[in-house]
Image (cartoon, rainbow, N blue to C red; front, side, top):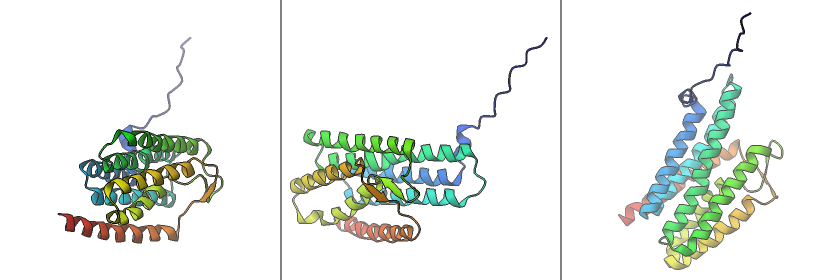
Length: 217
């Protein structure tokens, strides 16, 4: 009597998921975040902020694209969710931590804050991966991308302070934000027309920070 082993289900290759349009959009956001981290380390903060703003825009866009594409498999949806979460920790966890450290000239006093920023991001994203939204339009806690959107706005006023004072301001603000990120408060999940607001916000600040950088050069 011949024993037949059960046929193993077809397993797609890793690279096949990279051809999925929402994932391409997610990876474009990762590239923007990486450029933001690179320029933050170099001390070119206006360009670093431009990078992370576009990371937010791509992060919003990948979800919109995914919802509009029909016929995506369960594997594609699951992979896209995991990829998006991993990229978020780089864009909205590692980036603000590196930005804070670099702006403080890598002072060891800012290391605890940098750790807490990344740790809070990891905790929040892990929680979201398990429990998801409260309902279709509500998060538990403040979404991480709002941290960098507000950082981009606050940094417009950097010239009004000494670097030492402003680094403390950034430190305090980011600590306040991480408390809201992992708190039980409920915040709205923005979408629809808010995506167009984000586009305008990103383009406007890109122009402003590009102008600031050209004056520094």
